[in-house]
Length: 183
Image 1 (cartoon, rainbow, N blue to C red):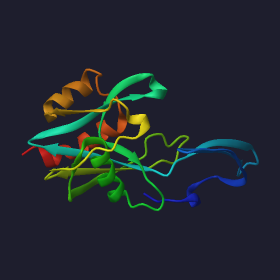
Image 2 (image 1 turned 180 degrees about the vertical axis):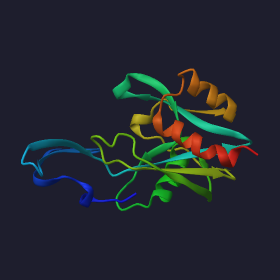
Image 3 (image 1 turned 45 degrees about the vertical axis):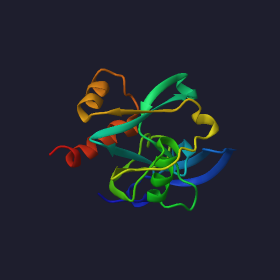
Image 4 (image 1 turned 90 degrees about the horizontal axis):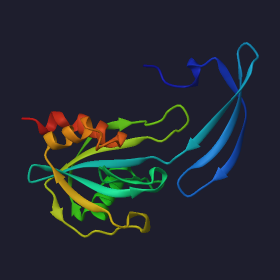
């Protein structure tokens, strides 16, 4: 598939930053279509992140944590935001240890996803980690109460299909990791 602006039917007229935050920046772009119509695009700019399907003794580690926007505790893979100019694989290693207390030098890139391309430019890089070694957890303030849970692939698939796992990056990464996990 071709990439880039050459496939569009508009040009950018102006861009206005409306919020600069710790996790996202927000801007409004004014565009003009080839037919002269003016349009506006609201964009959430995000540095991206990495998530890890970590396998220990044949089981996948999910973490449970409270997610403020949802006002709920959910299951998800260990994951976090890239610290510019951090490489995604280094982010994956850092987040794996911070959130689970395990380390791995055996990471395989599964792919990358964009979760909400209609308004956000975030790219998430997905990895599979095996040969886990004990490290040390280092939870951040927003990760209070985070716990490790060990599930088989079949148990995770059951939780996806019954609605217990709703996190998009987790569902995508499990799907991509399945070819490595099913013998």
